[in-house]
Length: 620
Image (cartoon, rainbow, N blue to C red):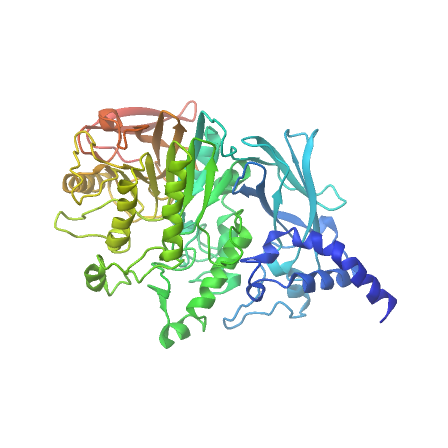
């Protein structure tokens, strides 16, 4: 063997540690290398390439700022992307006209070169990095779309930190990021704030809601309940400012990388990622609409759908989506045996346990597929139907019990779809794609809570593009009293979309909300017009929930309207009466008044004035 080759092999173990530090080389799982990257091979190739050429820092850019997530008491995940091009890697593109990663056409090869880029990262308790508490080095290549994901360690619980990446040996630096660790399991924490989001469809408008919470800066963490992207296409690139890229429905790894990357160009989404640690899960559109274990509404295991999808199978498409998601999101791989697992939990001191579920993709039984609604309605009570599979379901119940046993005040459950019963017309019309379509699974959940006397449960939901606030009620003999909330076992806060939804007038939305609260005793508030988000301020004695609406998402703007405020007192297991203090600014309450909000522009100052008016809301 040549001396040069021997030297390269001798250097490999030390270099491998640096490559291994970039967690994205193991996306989506360390235990499934055939689905990810052969790290020793990439490291060896990188050493050979670096002997011939290294990157000029002037030709590199941190294309999508920075992000952090999945906070633990002593560590947090940090993310960035450093690349010679905004263009995403074209791995596994199979559609007609695509180019291979290893096409040596000069322009394409530069954009997708496997030549490694070296980055350093630092973490400090201050913006000036006078006291660096952790630092490290990592490589990235086109194999993982030039993304970097590392675990910052040696941190203290419930502490704010600042972090930054730079190209090795240069002053080329990323934007400054801010993050925060979680409390230790036994810490006495007085208060934690979280902002909750779902459903950000890029062509539907600007992601103002993400920025509004960041600008107020009164929460500690962001929870995203899914539909971070959408798989369908809309608009014409170069003509429509919010046209999707790629232009059509996405199937390949390149497609999913490109679509996520496009979403991350939204300035308000970028601002939120830069300032808060995120705890996200996916819903269905990160893969495909109305997904389940064996397919989705737009792609099932049939020859026709296989050909329509550019010869991408259900399983391959799902793995493309999962890998791109793990590459681009600041999340941990919590179980190396399970490449599709995203369900996980966080112990936030003695204050609460956050249990994040996957009720969409993990092991879900068949759902509504546009042409089988009657069939799903027949199966709703079938004991064999499951939203999450037996593995996750048993884990879920164990987490609820362990949380209660350890004395955590609250159990906060982040899931994708509405849990509470919602009769859509007063005649027994239920959404088969939500928990209502999986009654046996819902009943098992309620039974576990009631039988084990587990209270102070807060269910979080997204997906529906509407706001819902309900007492959590098992209707099978619970003797629920809607006027007082007696015999409820908790509260559900379900939120609207950041941008997704269908056009509707305020008058039409409020009329529908009024009929919904009349037909569903446990539904205390319904609001169907605004795009937006909600914040929770969680303390030992109570949880305060504040809902906010964006007046318009047609332009980028910082406007928002306070829609409603709710309180749950520890030990009550229901919303405090009068619900929302007896009045909301939009939608309909079970009992209470509607005091709506109007915005007027002060042309002298350029600022918006907020006034409240009774009656019909004025459009603007």
